[in-house]
Length: 461
Image (cartoon, rainbow, N blue to C red; front, side, top):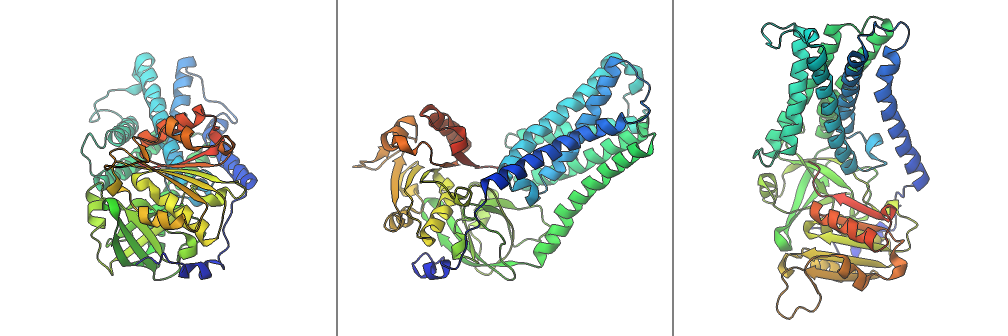
């Protein structure tokens, strides 16, 4: 069982919170953004270096530029989805994954533009479209285009296509590898922009870079995880169908773990398996080295996880994320808003505040469909006695005699409870996407600036 008693507070005194310094985080983030811009611009700089290839006209040159821009964006996707902490640290892995989604759309639009302009204005350069008759390097380009379009379609419409997450992930990886390999083969096969040593070094670097990220993500990191297994020591049923799994490390525990972060979890599977899901770590670092994941059964995989037996072997890849009070060391107080199982990162941050005897004021809005589905409500009530915590339950279908807030958390509910001097406090929100979108608009409407709104994206894919 997870120890949620005061006995953990003594050991917590030795824990030093890993507060992130805002200037350093901003500089780190700016450096990553600049590095990405350089990566996109570098192919054009090298391709234009020295003797320029003969121009085929404005449309031809523009089409070539679209193609190389598309390849640069496609190569960046492997770094953005590789869970490289030096990339995710300033922004949070959820934001990086969201940005990856939009950049993927951008890459495909550029690819379609590249092909479309050639098809409309330079069709002879495309040769025949039949892959059995076309030159191999041109067919490779078309294979790449089909793969990347299929990536977008299968990702955006995964639920409508009834693709289970593990099937989608295998398909996603396979299409990405095939598409990137075909794109590089297309560039090298066409050969009209690989005629100098600098240009050949460029394409060699792109190839080796994407291969290195794939090797690290799918070979080296699972090998490291295999040397640091975890063991399930408790499976506790909570309200609302949630189950809390407690894991103990059989080796080094999590490093540089902050409250509110999440990790990717595999249970009773090979560390090389693609079947894994991200879950918030619902306890605080002060209550480590064990970690707890509070899971609500929302699909086939989570339905299996809540039945996990004691003693099952697990692998944990983390921690990731920036939804942490340790990024807000100078805050005068906190506004926290949770919907359903979105309470888990909030709970982790509250555990940390309690373990540190932090008495800054906290207002927590907790929305649920019904009173019985309000997970951890007893635990939150106990925290009120040890923290300066104001807890506002908002129930859509309240029980008879209910006197607190009803319906959904919205602008009116917020205005009834938030004093004017709280607008400068951090506002931490976690819940389903519709809730996040609505609340961000409501908070801005009542005078909370975007820089004071922190949120955890409920679904990464």
